[in-house]
Image 1 (cartoon, rainbow over the protein chains, first blue to last red):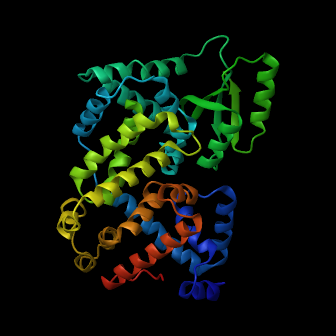
Image 2 (tube, each protein chain N blue to C red; image 1 turned 90 degrees about the vertical axis):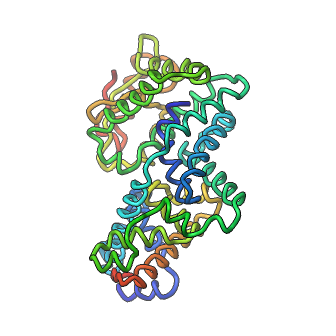
Image 3 (tube, chains in turn cyan, green; image 1 turned 135 degrees about the horizontal axis):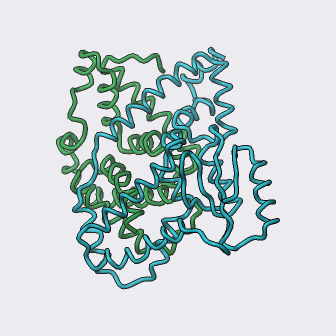
Length: 232
Length: 166
């Protein structure tokens, strides 16, 4: 295998070799991640290359982090431009920004690794952004947009009788972002809150009977990446 | 909209800045990108992650911005003004700071290579997502990153950094 990977470096890289950067970033699916792990365990040359990749990965993050953040001028310019736009139905953007994919897309695998504090972090960050914007001196465009988003969040977090079922779910530590996303999609679930490493999920958009909820919980508990599921 | 902006504007800014290498243009890109999102939100079908969609728009806007600029304006001086004011790789090596040398060489990669390295390592995009953002086949994504890494190794070697690969 050592000789093989050396030869590959001189010629065409192998499939596994090409997947190493994604393995370092934690963005491979479970099957490919397993294949890479097995190859790394077998091939010291590949492991050496992987160590180099880990270094590249860390320094790329470090380099990007030094780029700083944009000034508030960019935000002011954006909302001034939106203000100048013709009026539109606000629900379009609320649908977009609260999709599950968007939620997870905003969390990198690095962040997901901090699962215990993830929920609090997201909610605090979200509340911070909303709070900052709400307390800011608002132009008319911003004021009209705010009518939409904070309401959406309040509604999501409130929960009430006759609402779609909700449950507290803890994902297994080895659960990957893609796996969680797939599970949310298959259950038509959305994340409406998080605390202490647990996610609060809402299922579908209709109320369910007790039996249906029990069946749902039972199915959920049978999922490989779910370590705990309790109805709310 | 402000929640979406709050979550993603830094990511959009950094991706744009690495592409255009001009802080002013990168700042302008942000409002252009999110304004496009505002205008086209109804077209977003949720088949891809929001970040993938945002980065694809950012890339398109960045390339358009670059095309608008005269070639001469995108020189090394402009790049150095915003990116990595650390020592040259050789000096960094002399000081035994291989991390700094690596960062310097990452900045010295071509735009095509910088883009793919950033998308995979910093923005943590999968093969499929990078293919969608850059608009190339998945296999090309994999080989392009491989050759970007080889180029990086060559730059480091030229600066006196031997990492044992390739």
